[in-house]
Figure 1: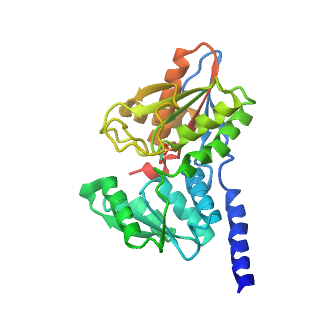
Figure 2: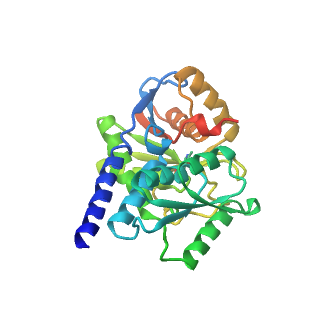
Figure 3: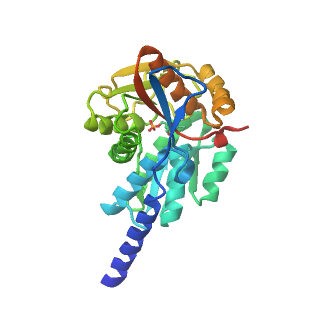
Amino acid sequence: MTLAISNHTLNLQARLDQVEKLIGHTPLYPINKVYSKTGVQIFAKLEWQQLGGSVKARAAFNIIKQAILNGQLTEEKELLDATSGNTGIAYASIGAALGINITLCLPENASEQRKRILESLGVNIVYTSKFEGTDGAQLKAKELYKENPDLYYYADQYANDHNWQAHVTTTAPEIWNATNGKVTHFVAGLGTTGTLMGTTRGLKQFNKNITAVALEPNNPMHGLEGWKHLETAIVPKIYDATVADQFLEIDTVEAFDLVKKIALKEGLLVSPSAAANLLGAIQVAEQIDSGVIVTTFADDASKYRE
Ligand SMILES: Cc1ncc(COP(=O)(O)O)c(C=O)c1O
């Protein structure tokens, strides 16, 4: 019996190690054609080039890994969360690779494409009312967990410190190394806020003078998937308003225009939130005479086509 359990644990550990190789290590791409300024270089980190196709692979993997290592998540349990977005797809891809069951609460009006992706990856989907949006999905996840705490590991990405910590240990050192320590600014939009919180904290361990710039949509009805308008949304528990040095507002229409330019001039098919990040990086570039600005392209355009 003891042997069987330890083999089982060993197998899961081996699979964790294999999957970890597919997380992070994304390239930094120099943006030169949609924007250039002497003395200033903008780099975009191409975050779709990892398992599950988005930046959320980092947070989802760390959340799952830490929960397995501390015994909260086993093959007998199911990971539970509320998300129709990139985190859901990341949980689903990693869960399938590790043999961990995933249950996600989704508003019934989530796009057909996302439902198909999640179904293909074997997710157990619990649909919630389209009238209650993602807040309704979050309430349902909490309710399911309360009803059956022994069945579920409730990941709660908005409150889980392993979300932002993934960026301290992976995104930040990758940026520091790829720029040979020359990075001066890090710019990112706020969703769960994990990318900005963690990457900033990690970069400031290398050089406390690096400037962190947080981006927000300029109105509540912004349509920038993955981003939050924090003045009017539920503020994630992991968010700390003192981490960013500067805040900038981004216009959705300008972001969608930039998606087209990035495709035509840089050869990259990116998501609206990626273009929104580049708009923020360009605003920063306009303010400075010299520097190395790094931002993230959270995912590519494939999930946003009609
Ligand atoms: C497309 C997209 N952009 C940006 C973000 C924001 O990242 P974070 O949650 O780390 O703040 C997300 C998060 O889900 C996302 O899906």
